[in-house]
Image 1 (cartoon, rainbow, N blue to C red):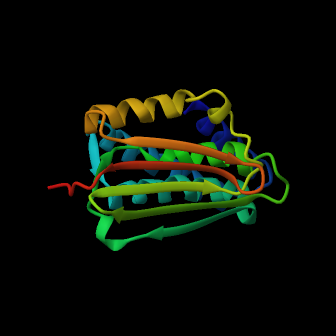
Image 2: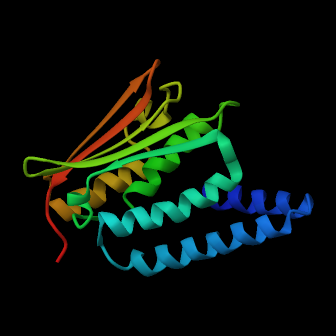
Image 3: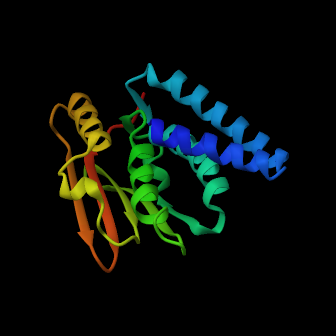
Length: 185
């Protein structure tokens, strides 16, 4: 997403301007690692949840430099789902939407919770933020990132998936994804 890249480069530039070169260098290293990892894995249509979480950690380490204490991440990931098959780059766009609409506009920042668990024969992934519950992706139906996510889920699971997006003015936005529980071999 060019928005992410421009924000990151602006943050690096600001760090250099403030003579915080060690922090700028660390952020640039993480950005390069993120791009390298995403390019290497982008050729693959699928990955497992464990590797997807590693990529998400790289992305979040960059965003944590930008937002510091304003960005809080909670995870509730069941160990039994770590080897479950999902499309590459599934979580990053969802979390990026939460950062864009729930964290960035608020001075006090906010919280994003990511959960993944097995329910019956399904993998359920939920990304929840505590923003104002007014994500554009809900009013527009599916934005570009969500449309791409939907298309990749459709291609991988042949229509056997479900995405629900719910806004709540009191609790933020929740994106829930249900896919077949299939371990990656």
